[in-house]
Image 1: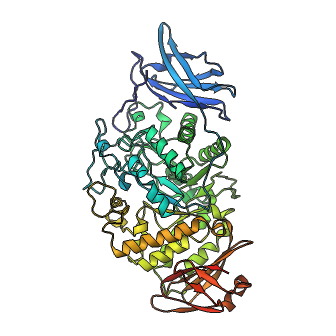
Image 2 (image 1 turned 120 degrees about the horizontal axis):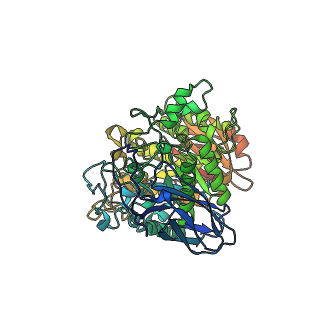
Image 3 (image 1 turned 135 degrees about the vertical axis):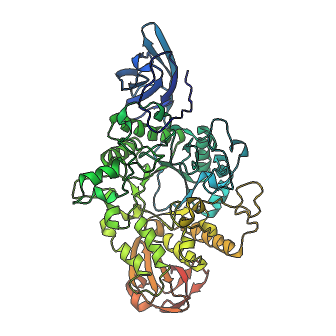
Length: 613
């Protein structure tokens, strides 16, 4: 039998338990799939003394090829071959050590049929933190065996949001106009405190029960698909939580990076492409711990690499997932990450992966881009990346209205560097996320600045992402702590008087922001010209930035006036090459027709999205 237990220990316990009675406590992956393109499967088996056992199976099409034993006698890595002819069913594995035997029935399921849905620039992804979106099942807030209990009054504590809360409000998300949902990590984080964010995994194959079961996540994905939306799962390969069950009994000393004393990463991901970087700095970047409670995995260990790769493939096949967002993408071993991305694409062609690459400059961000020919020969195979430089540019653009070299020129100058990306339309773009001061706060809590920023993000190149609560201009300053960037969405908890889902007690500003967001996102849904059309922009002058999205059958003109008080006149003569053949336009935002494009006014702090006629 398998017993998935919760093990706790100090950070670095490197001694191993002696051999004795045999019980398989963990077997990962817990199941697998027939029809996979790669026939090899590696099982990690954990149980007292299991390393001394041999393994056999007589299931048709499944064979045991090799066994790998590590420093701990309590681990056994079993390499299987699952032929292309293998049928779904249950393969019995028999573990043998002399007269001792342990059997385990191993499920083999048929993998999902059909191509991966993936994401592209026709999508808008809604990023939410499961603990802070909605509490659909208060009965799972506090569970036996989970060390941190719910405390909604603590900004850094657990608040009770869960899978059911998300599922209950799929209609709201669909009505909002998003086409995809990205969940911050929901795997088990059985840490003593500050575990709500999900970035300290303690079991790679188990949804945190305070969010719901694996099957509840699978149902969420299925229901989202039925509602016309896709789902992105947040993953972390760089580190685990300090209370991961491995930490009581590591498979080998080099399973994680270890030092004589705690050593933190230097967070200098630029060392990878820096031609002058020291080997010491590169080593600390890759091997240093992200935080004291986040042991750093050693992806150079082939067993670790295989475990992580198989884990992602399992979640894709198990839940029929559409995308993965990989946390701290440059921090693990880069060659391993490139092999992982290539393997996922081989098994699930067209599957979407976006890597979090946190840089200020496109020259550094683009190093990780798909098909980028780097001078050092590195190829990431990464389908998409987070465009932090564009995010930072939007913050500057709409807080510096009178700056001739800043302001809207930040956006122009940023896009002028798109030659660094082989495929810039793949970049995921956003106003803010769960790790930074919210855009509304950053721009002085200006509703006008929000409308300008959202209009830009939804009409420029790339795949837009919207952070939960942005649609009602939630504020939050990182200087107060991360918990204030991740406050509860109003209406998601029983007893909330303010309710975004019903509109109850929203302020006039919140209502206006929500209505504006719905209008722009739902318009964008059906606009192929925004999804795949070309982009042409003009140098901003006097606080006005104009650009066009166009294809062979349609053209959209976007005009942004960032001036605080001045009306500006848009003259056709400057934009003649893009306006040739067009005489009228319809402004999507105001709902008004422009009868003469020769010259028209744009109000201060206003965005116009004009369908040209």
